[in-house]
Length: 194
Image (cartoon, rainbow, N blue to C red; front, top):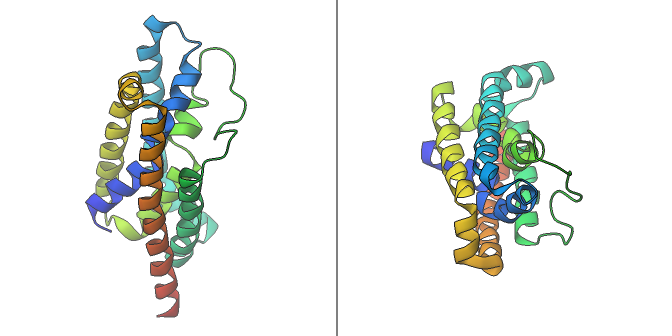
Protein backbone atom coordinates (compact mmCIF):
# COMPACT_ATOMS: atom_id res chain seq x y z
CA UNK A 1 0.00 0.00 0.00
CA UNK A 2 1.13 3.50 -0.76
CA UNK A 3 0.15 6.67 1.07
CA UNK A 4 -3.00 7.24 -1.00
CA UNK A 5 -4.20 3.66 -0.45
CA UNK A 6 -3.59 4.02 3.28
CA UNK A 7 -5.58 7.26 3.41
CA UNK A 8 -8.44 5.73 1.42
CA UNK A 9 -8.51 2.59 3.56
CA UNK A 10 -8.61 4.57 6.81
CA UNK A 11 -11.27 6.92 5.41
CA UNK A 12 -13.47 3.99 4.37
CA UNK A 13 -13.09 2.31 7.76
CA UNK A 14 -13.88 5.54 9.64
CA UNK A 15 -17.07 5.57 7.54
CA UNK A 16 -18.11 9.21 8.03
CA UNK A 17 -21.01 8.89 5.54
CA UNK A 18 -22.46 5.90 7.37
CA UNK A 19 -21.96 7.62 10.72
CA UNK A 20 -23.94 10.75 9.80
CA UNK A 21 -27.33 9.38 10.96
CA UNK A 22 -25.73 7.99 14.15
CA UNK A 23 -24.00 11.29 14.97
CA UNK A 24 -27.20 13.23 14.33
CA UNK A 25 -29.25 10.91 16.54
CA UNK A 26 -26.75 11.19 19.42
CA UNK A 27 -26.48 14.98 19.03
CA UNK A 28 -30.25 15.61 18.91
CA UNK A 29 -30.33 15.84 22.74
CA UNK A 30 -27.64 18.57 22.67
CA UNK A 31 -28.92 22.17 22.38
CA UNK A 32 -28.51 23.46 18.81
CA UNK A 33 -26.08 26.22 19.83
CA UNK A 34 -23.69 23.65 21.45
CA UNK A 35 -23.75 20.94 18.75
CA UNK A 36 -20.88 22.29 16.68
CA UNK A 37 -18.67 22.75 19.77
CA UNK A 38 -19.46 19.23 21.02
CA UNK A 39 -18.80 17.77 17.58
CA UNK A 40 -15.43 19.56 17.31
CA UNK A 41 -14.48 18.32 20.79
CA UNK A 42 -15.37 14.71 19.93
CA UNK A 43 -13.47 14.85 16.62
CA UNK A 44 -10.46 16.18 18.55
CA UNK A 45 -10.70 13.34 21.09
CA UNK A 46 -10.80 10.85 18.23
CA UNK A 47 -7.60 12.30 16.77
CA UNK A 48 -5.82 12.01 20.13
CA UNK A 49 -6.80 8.33 20.33
CA UNK A 50 -5.63 7.69 16.76
CA UNK A 51 -2.33 9.54 17.30
CA UNK A 52 -1.66 7.64 20.53
CA UNK A 53 -2.28 4.38 18.72
CA UNK A 54 0.07 5.34 15.87
CA UNK A 55 2.80 5.97 18.45
CA UNK A 56 2.17 2.82 20.48
CA UNK A 57 1.03 0.34 17.79
CA UNK A 58 4.51 -1.02 17.08
CA UNK A 59 5.09 -1.69 20.80
CA UNK A 60 1.72 -3.38 21.19
CA UNK A 61 2.66 -5.73 18.35
CA UNK A 62 6.02 -6.47 19.95
CA UNK A 63 4.46 -7.22 23.35
CA UNK A 64 1.88 -9.53 21.77
CA UNK A 65 4.52 -11.13 19.45
CA UNK A 66 2.41 -10.49 16.36
CA UNK A 67 3.95 -11.16 12.95
CA UNK A 68 3.11 -8.97 9.92
CA UNK A 69 1.50 -11.97 8.20
CA UNK A 70 -0.81 -12.49 11.18
CA UNK A 71 -1.81 -8.82 11.13
CA UNK A 72 -2.41 -8.98 7.37
CA UNK A 73 -4.66 -12.03 7.49
CA UNK A 74 -6.50 -11.01 10.68
CA UNK A 75 -6.85 -7.42 9.47
CA UNK A 76 -8.28 -8.64 6.17
CA UNK A 77 -10.84 -10.80 7.99
CA UNK A 78 -11.86 -8.01 10.37
CA UNK A 79 -12.15 -5.46 7.56
CA UNK A 80 -14.18 -7.95 5.54
CA UNK A 81 -16.66 -8.35 8.41
CA UNK A 82 -16.88 -4.57 8.85
CA UNK A 83 -17.45 -4.14 5.11
CA UNK A 84 -20.21 -6.74 5.20
CA UNK A 85 -21.87 -4.80 8.01
CA UNK A 86 -21.72 -1.69 5.84
CA UNK A 87 -23.22 -3.48 2.83
CA UNK A 88 -25.83 -5.36 4.89
CA UNK A 89 -26.54 -3.17 7.96
CA UNK A 90 -28.31 -4.69 10.96
CA UNK A 91 -31.73 -3.28 11.94
CA UNK A 92 -30.68 -2.25 15.48
CA UNK A 93 -27.73 -0.23 14.15
CA UNK A 94 -24.13 -0.16 15.30
CA UNK A 95 -24.61 1.25 18.80
CA UNK A 96 -27.80 -0.39 20.06
CA UNK A 97 -29.08 1.74 22.95
CA UNK A 98 -27.95 5.35 23.00
CA UNK A 99 -26.60 7.02 26.13
CA UNK A 100 -28.72 9.84 27.56
CA UNK A 101 -27.38 13.39 27.78
CA UNK A 102 -24.52 15.17 26.06
CA UNK A 103 -21.90 12.78 24.68
CA UNK A 104 -18.41 12.99 26.14
CA UNK A 105 -15.76 10.79 24.47
CA UNK A 106 -18.24 7.88 24.18
CA UNK A 107 -19.92 7.05 21.76
CA UNK A 108 -18.92 9.70 19.19
CA UNK A 109 -15.11 9.85 19.54
CA UNK A 110 -14.82 6.18 20.51
CA UNK A 111 -16.12 3.82 19.10
CA UNK A 112 -17.90 5.60 16.21
CA UNK A 113 -14.99 7.70 14.93
CA UNK A 114 -11.90 5.94 16.31
CA UNK A 115 -13.29 2.46 16.69
CA UNK A 116 -11.70 -0.96 16.99
CA UNK A 117 -11.68 -1.45 13.23
CA UNK A 118 -9.71 1.75 12.66
CA UNK A 119 -7.23 0.84 15.39
CA UNK A 120 -6.79 -2.66 13.92
CA UNK A 121 -6.15 -1.08 10.51
CA UNK A 122 -3.50 1.16 12.07
CA UNK A 123 -1.72 -1.94 13.40
CA UNK A 124 -1.82 -3.44 9.93
CA UNK A 125 -0.59 -0.27 8.25
CA UNK A 126 2.18 0.09 10.85
CA UNK A 127 3.60 -3.24 9.67
CA UNK A 128 2.82 -3.43 6.00
CA UNK A 129 1.70 -0.22 4.38
CA UNK A 130 3.45 2.95 5.44
CA UNK A 131 7.23 2.70 5.86
CA UNK A 132 7.66 5.43 8.46
CA UNK A 133 5.67 6.70 11.43
CA UNK A 134 5.58 10.14 9.79
CA UNK A 135 3.85 8.66 6.73
CA UNK A 136 1.31 6.90 8.91
CA UNK A 137 0.67 10.12 10.85
CA UNK A 138 0.09 11.91 7.55
CA UNK A 139 -2.33 9.21 6.36
CA UNK A 140 -4.23 9.26 9.66
CA UNK A 141 -4.37 13.06 9.72
CA UNK A 142 -5.70 13.35 6.16
CA UNK A 143 -8.31 10.58 6.64
CA UNK A 144 -9.31 12.07 10.01
CA UNK A 145 -9.61 15.61 8.58
CA UNK A 146 -11.73 14.46 5.61
CA UNK A 147 -13.98 12.41 7.89
CA UNK A 148 -14.23 15.27 10.39
CA UNK A 149 -15.24 17.75 7.68
CA UNK A 150 -17.98 15.41 6.48
CA UNK A 151 -19.27 14.96 10.02
CA UNK A 152 -19.16 18.73 10.65
CA UNK A 153 -21.39 19.11 7.60
CA UNK A 154 -23.61 16.19 8.62
CA UNK A 155 -26.84 18.19 8.71
CA UNK A 156 -26.14 19.52 5.21
CA UNK A 157 -25.35 16.04 3.83
CA UNK A 158 -28.42 14.59 5.51
CA UNK A 159 -30.61 17.30 4.03
CA UNK A 160 -29.13 16.92 0.49
CA UNK A 161 -28.76 13.13 0.28
CA UNK A 162 -31.53 11.99 2.59
CA UNK A 163 -31.69 8.61 4.32
CA UNK A 164 -31.62 6.59 1.07
CA UNK A 165 -28.74 8.52 -0.46
CA UNK A 166 -26.62 8.05 2.67
CA UNK A 167 -27.47 4.33 2.75
CA UNK A 168 -26.49 3.94 -0.92
CA UNK A 169 -23.15 5.72 -0.36
CA UNK A 170 -22.39 3.60 2.70
CA UNK A 171 -23.06 0.40 0.74
CA UNK A 172 -20.80 1.58 -2.08
CA UNK A 173 -18.02 2.33 0.44
CA UNK A 174 -18.61 -1.12 1.94
CA UNK A 175 -18.15 -2.79 -1.44
CA UNK A 176 -14.83 -0.99 -1.96
CA UNK A 177 -13.74 -1.99 1.54
CA UNK A 178 -14.62 -5.66 0.81
CA UNK A 179 -12.10 -5.61 -2.05
CA UNK A 180 -9.43 -3.95 0.11
CA UNK A 181 -10.02 -6.53 2.87
CA UNK A 182 -9.73 -9.48 0.49
CA UNK A 183 -6.50 -8.04 -0.93
CA UNK A 184 -5.05 -7.65 2.60
CA UNK A 185 -5.86 -11.27 3.44
CA UNK A 186 -4.41 -12.49 0.12
CA UNK A 187 -1.20 -10.53 0.73
CA UNK A 188 -0.87 -12.04 4.22
CA UNK A 189 -1.46 -15.58 2.96
CA UNK A 190 0.99 -15.02 0.08
CA UNK A 191 3.70 -13.96 2.57
CA UNK A 192 3.04 -17.05 4.73
CA UNK A 193 3.34 -19.37 1.74
CA UNK A 194 6.45 -17.65 0.33
